[in-house]
Image (cartoon, rainbow, N blue to C red; front, side, top):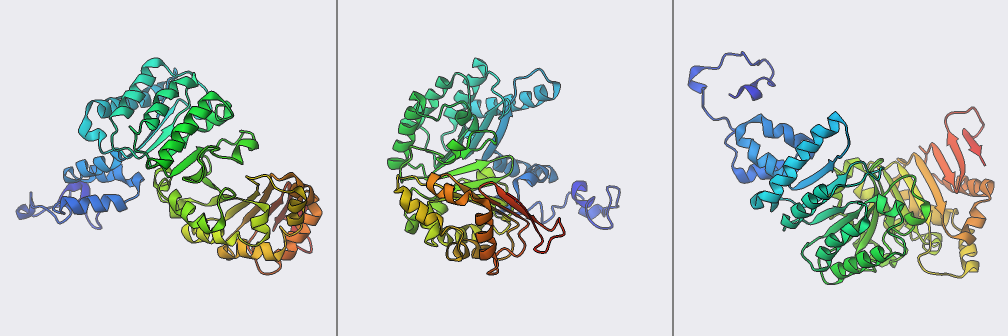
Amino acid sequence: MDDSISSYLPGCSPTHHIPEQLIDFPTHFQTIPPELKIQICRLVARRFLPALALVHSSWTSVAQDMLLTSIAVTLWNEDNEWHAYKRAAVIRLLCTLRDTPEKALRVRSFRVTFNDREKAIPVTEEDWRLYVDTLKQLRCVRHIRLPFTDPVERLDEIVQMIADRKLALRSIELAGRLYKEGHMADSPFANRLGSALDGATHGGSLRVVVAEGIDDVAESWVTRFIPTIGDCASSMCYNPDYGTLSFYTPTYDFPYWKIVFERSFVVLPYLYDDPRQDVKSVRIFFSPEDFAQGLAGHFTSLIAESFPKVTRLTIALHNYYATDPNEDAKNGRALLKGNALVPALSPFGSRLQSLTFECYVESAFRYLKHSKLGLNLLAESLALGLGKNLRYLDVVGATATRGYVNTPSGWFVQC
């Protein structure tokens, strides 16, 4: 029995005596067929694959090959000893993929960040060429992160690869810094990228466009993740700091919400090690009309079933299409009534601990911003048996916390 295995077995140690007749005799663990090893590696959480590669030489290649399927690295370019060590390792990996076609063909997800997500440190031409030349070799890649670089026109080379269908992408992730620096506003670059993504959805394989969130980016961009994808791809936002997913429903009629949601699963394995266990916070954008009519449950039921660990929910009200302000104000009065809340919250049972309402529709906001009224309506609806374990409420800025103060209701309200 191999020492690396025996040292972890009860009653065994690296010096435990092994009968002479068993030396060099293969164990069941070593003789598992290669195709079964691949299936096992697919079931193992990615964070355990490096350890599995070290268990025995017979597992090294299959575990390493599985690690190559999804690559997420940061290419640092700072005067820092630790960053220099990590940079050297990343450069070796990228050079290997660039120069070894058989390894490059194994890559399905390729997510590269230059320096820090939060800092606009210049990217050298040498680093950029290595990134692009490596990407060109990934003929089977299905997901990429479009990184931030300055000047942004460098990205045109990748945009053209998408437009020419040289990348058969099923999903693409846009760096949050592209939004923060204003490049995703109404700009020539945004128009070129939008045209390429639109062509990839209508005539290609693209199904999901993910916007990477950054906390200090103005909220205006959050309300419209990708303004150019039409109805052919689902639009989703992901905040890597908190693992929060955001979904945008107002561009679709509710009978299509399930289709849009299911498309999103294409990208989730690239963002999370285990989506069902790791997703704990979700923001969902609804139109005031859909929410007031009690349609939100069609989407929240999908969330609750797919992500059983979600305890924080944000309902964001936003209209993609222009609507009658009077109609929005009429809907506003119904937003926090039981008829709207029960369908939206009941799929989560009693597991929600935090509930937030955001509003980007001015006429509805004017109604909800009367914080005492909003919180009272919400409390009235929660009395129906929803949210028994809620500890935090936020209605467009008015907050209430429970369990920390000695009040008759148990809630401390700040308006």
